[in-house]
Amino acid sequence: MSNFIQSLKDWSFENLPDKIMNALPHIITFLLIIVIGFWLANRIGELLVKLLTRRNVDHSMHRFLQRSVVILLKIVVAVIALEQIGISINSFVTAIGAAGITAGLGLQNSIAQFAGGVQIMFNKPFKSGDYVEIDGVQGKVKEIRFMYTTLITNDNKTVVVPNLNVTTKNLINYSHQGTIRIDSLFFIGYDDDIEKAKKVLLNVATSNSNVIKNPKPIVGVSEHGASGVGITLMTWCESDKYWETYFQIQEEVKLAFDKNGITIPYNQLDVHIDK
Image (cartoon, rainbow, N blue to C red; front, top):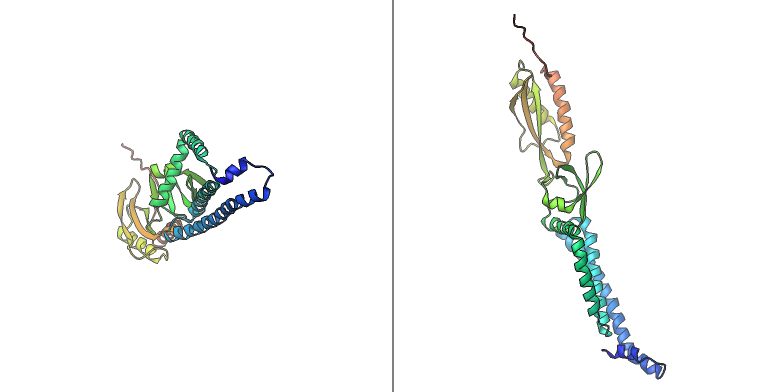
């Protein structure tokens, strides 16, 4: 046991100046360790954010990681400072460890969610702003946390997806490659000119400013339906312009078909009477 602790146990007002002088170095050491250690912990937190930025770790995780590291470092500094003045924390650490084991058994699911967040951070299957589909739910990634990921759907709904689902369910990232293909199916009548319809579709695709030139648009007969011939038009655009381009093509094809006399058949039933 340190002289500082022993002097506290033997405290009395006799020889007070001497006792203060004996305790002063320990108090100064304690304060210096706390002040310098906490300052270093904050600086390390700032450096961590810069490192995460250079490593392209999603910015929504920066604050959580920074705060976690800073708090952990400050705890270590406080432990070192207490040890310097002779305060043993072994029993405290033992109690914390026992409590941690008990809590861990009751928080298995939360721990799994946290582990999922760690996997997302290192594997980087998506980032904020990507358009993804997770277990059948589509939306733009708004925020990535260690426990959950937040999506904004096309109809502006906020969906909170547990990270355990992100790492264990099917995940589709529509933005990862930067471009995406639009597959559009159009029907024409059996009496219409197929080659003319294909040329009209290609002209619509090449005239659209959102459709990229490489890969080139593809058009071809894909179905013989009950009421007409199905022709598929495949075009490519930037991922964040998918719906804008899709709606433009649908409208422009209808106008082009009308202009060129190409019919779009509707479901019909022919009845033949046997005499």
